[in-house]
Length: 205
Image 1: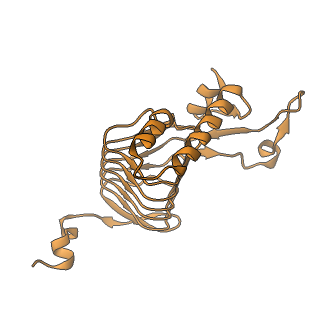
Image 2: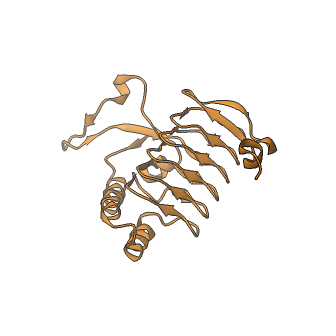
Image 3: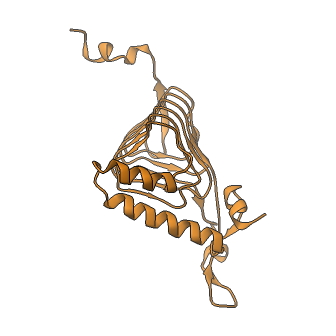
């Protein structure tokens, strides 16, 4: 396996690998370009995102600023919307379904570092190149989800269809479909049902 294949498969990989470094450098440059464009400059934004995020469906929108590690490990569904300051560290695949809304300052992190410093610390090759060994875990967010502001989603998590994740939550475990979940660590509060219709919550005219 190449180091890129190891990274995407969730195996320990060499962070100094030339292919990985080149893709990350390109992604970071494209993020800077995107974040410097006006939201009304739709043609320029579309061109940048076509190179940065090749696996997207129709109707997705990134308010920006936006940051990612690689970009080509992110899969956005149809009608995706993200508010300000979305960060996705996509060393492993990040799959996001259709009709997902993301609030400001949300972070989605696939990378995992060893717990023992003896394996975690930066080391050097014979030629002086600095590197470390990391691995990552994929993240999946289902269809029709709302991820509120300042949520952090950690590697290995799957969020089922129709969920709402409350503001400021840190999601460290799977969330079943149609759940309202909040907190640090994020826990399911209850199911979302017909009783949560707007008419039930705020009354009918």
